[in-house]
Amino acid sequence: MIELKQISYGLEDRQILRSVSLSIPSGKFIALMGGNGAGKTTLAKITKGLIVPSSGSVVLDGRDISSIEREYQTKVGIVFQNPENQIVSSIVEEDVAFGPENLSLSSPEIAARVESSLKTVGLWDLRHRSVQALSGGQKQRLAIAGILALRPSYIIFDEATALLDPVGKHEVLNTALELSKSVGVLWITHDLREALMADSIYALREGEMIFSGSVPEFLSRGDIMEKANVVIPDEITLAQELMQRGVRVDWPITKESLLKATMLLSSKMSH
Image 1 (cartoon, one colour):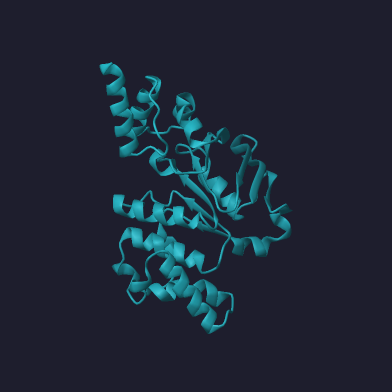
Image 2 (spheres, rainbow, N blue to C red):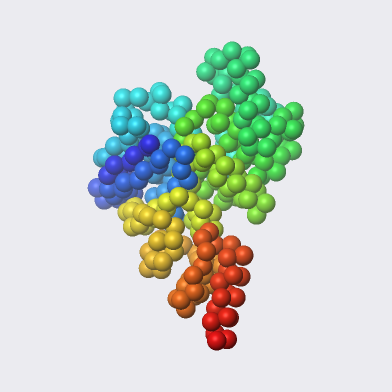
C-alpha cells in the first residue's frame, strides 16, 4: 500500500497542498477528483516521487520512500495527459523495450516483457507499426505498456483521458480497470463518469482533501460535488431524483439499473 500522510507542498504565501492524506491499496482502483487548480497533478508527482513535499511523508508498505528511492521508482509508474511526452521510439515494440533495456535485462527477458505488456493493453498485433500511425487512445495504451514492461506495483493515471476522443477514453479507462485487479491504481480525473467504478474516491479543493469514501457516499453529497467542481452527468442526476422519490437504484448505475428503477417508480405511482 502507498500511504500519503499529511502532505503539504508550496511556499508560505502559496500552499498548493495542505495536510493531504490518501491511501492506494494494492489491487484497488482509487479515484481522485477536483477542478482545475485543486492540486491533483502536484499530488500525482509527489506520489510518484518526482517532487518532495514541504512536509508529510509518502510510505510504501511501511517504509518511507526516501529510504527506498530507487526501488520505489520501479514500483510506481505514472501516465500523464499527453502520451507523446512518454513515447521515446518510433516503432511500437521498440518503445516498450526501452525501459527494460535501461535495466540491462537479458534479451529473452526484454522480449517476454514487451510481448506481455503489449498483449495486456491490446496492441500486440500492432507491435511493428509506426507510433505515428496510432490513434490517440492507442498511443496512451502504448505509454501504459511501456510502464507495464517495468513491472510496477502501482500506476498513477493523471488525467490520462483528457486529450482523447470518446473511443480512446473508453479504451484507456477499461485498460486501467483491468490492471487494477493486480496493481494499485490512482485514477485522477475531473470526469465523474470515469470515477463511478472506483473502489473509493477522494476529492480535492484548493489543495485540501474535502472528501474520502465510497462512490455512493460521494454521490449523496451534492455539496461536496459542487465544492469539487464536479460536473454531474445526466444519468447521475436521474438516479439522485429516483432515490429522492424512495426508489432504490442498483449499483453500479447503468442504463439497465436506471430503467429498472424508473419502471418501479411508474409501478408505485400507478398504484
